[in-house]
Length: 316
Ligand code: CO
Ligand code: CO
Ligand code: CO
Image 1 (tube, rainbow, N blue to C red):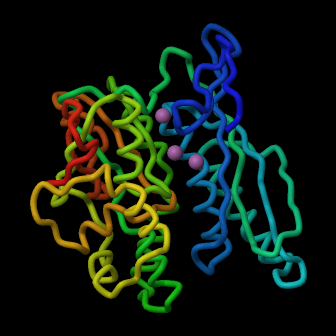
Image 2 (cartoon, rainbow, N blue to C red):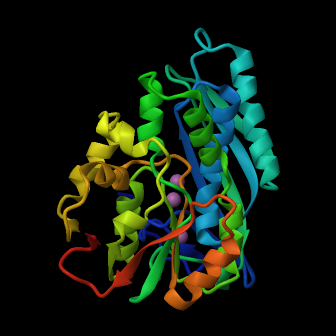
């Protein structure tokens, strides 16, 4: 644990486990900063580059910020991975950053026994417009903006069980920026937001309700799922992180009714470049859903915020 710092300009520090750090530089401007990098989850280097950058930008979008600049982070074994592969990863990352209006200012690479890529991102936000993970209010609806199951599907890919069609689908979902979802959210009075990544829907929801001093109920039948996710769960294509999440959350999550084991697995599934989870009044939730549109057909109200109960998260 690092010592905490008391500084009035440090608007979001490490204490609240929010998505990104925020530092005020003037009354109407603050920096939003985050970093993420990981090992390839699929074979196509260009797709991997795009996904890694879309994933890195998500923390900025979850806070309501506008990402502006990025620095590449690369680790690779030069004797195994050739220069063209790295160039292709960087090109994918560059194009995704460009799509987001983010300028890449440079970066750094190191020799590493395992290939890794990601980005340190800086964004801007008005200090009054920060959307914390700690503002969820009783009665709020919870909106999720991408379907779940990327961990399970990429595990099936690793085990050579994923069809070409499902690979291109899961890849396109991971490549999709959360920018549109974030911009739509900012037109309303969202109370809290976080992006869904390694801790899965239930893990990130748990962090949100802990920070907000409330509980949540998840409507398991309403959660948007990637095609194939239930099937591959049945076939035990479960990433290691899924079990870790289940163990970590064992005492925090209660099933109110019997729930299909494979559906439950997906709620714990670690996501790469997952969607935003937005807590917003139930009146505004319908308007936000309309604003998000249904071009992807995978935005949904997946739960609600309740008063603090014995279990932080209940699944029905
Ligand atoms: Co995050
Ligand atoms: Co992150
Ligand atoms: Co946040």
